[in-house]
Image 1 (cartoon, rainbow, N blue to C red):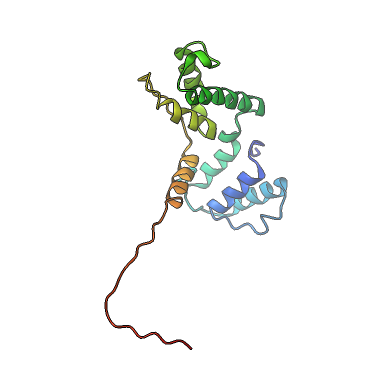
Image 2 (cartoon, rainbow, N blue to C red):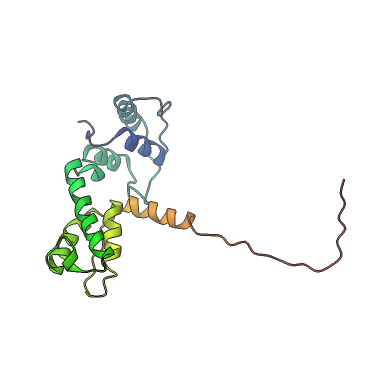
Length: 183
């Protein structure tokens, strides 16, 4: 049994780093070499560093099972992803135009929310998250649409939010006598 080809080289490198697997020259290997090294490594080691944040995998068997299954992020074809992004952009345009149905692509608000609910399951796409956020601010509707986001993307967004907080410098004033010497 082999790994599923939907896992990219970058995904495999991420797995090697996340689980701290002892594979040398991983960055210099192509995808086939990398997967061969990965499965050889998994057959020789007893346990892995568990990851409960991104992958929710704690054993070697769970990791192998994850690699045998299709990659959750790669289930969409390029054609499907482009269609989802096009619909999201139309809904974003509807929101930007003041939630006015008469100047939008859609005929009714029900049609807008039906399409939004349909594509909200692809919350890993940034346009879908933005569409849901803008649509939930609609003052003419009580309905809310929430994106379904994978655990890995959710953790990445939380980390991004923590690192992007602005830090304000604080001025502290001390009173007393100070001697300044210039050399």
